[in-house]
Picture (cartoon, helix red, strand yellow):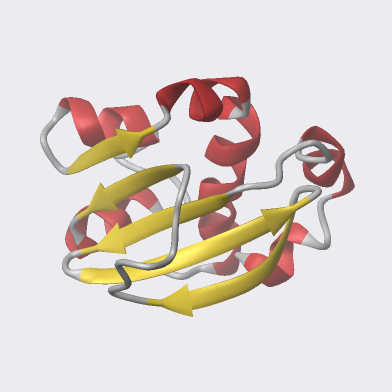
Length: 117
């Protein structure tokens, strides 16, 4: 996803004001992604009680595999679909997520292009 981000100028423009650390938790594995001006500048593996994050997307690995399919099933097509059907959870500063919602949703969907599933 990080490599694909550099090849999507419209997404970099959308995220040009996004400067946050986000926690992505897959099953029990934690990854802290630090964004600066819409680019991922650092990824750290957790768990870490010292590393602050603005919001977190927590999901099970099987659900993310379905999310990253080129054409995902209903309920796995969107991060809020994962939450609605009990496959994920969003924690933290929801306002920051909502302010950058399109950017973050499109960033997460980049895995569909890379065939991470």
